[in-house]
Length: 88
Figure (spheres, rainbow, N blue to C red):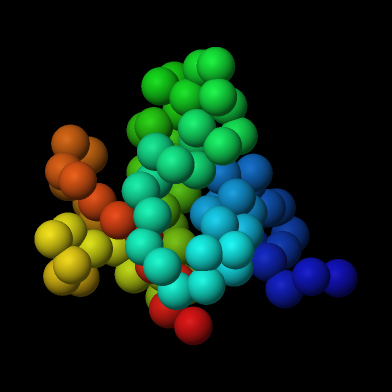
């Protein structure tokens, strides 16, 4: 079984963030890139959800959330230009 962040009940957005981290190999990407990849026609409806998944992964130490290249706490930055980067 794969070592997913929450292997008992993986969230599709959590899995997609981790997969994008793997594919991007340390490069930063926007949370919106994840939902556009999964839901290209209706991605706007999932922005809050991807931010929640991002917050959870950041709390677990799986990813870094960046603003202007500097690590930030992702909570409360829903309208900021955030980027995600894998910690490993």
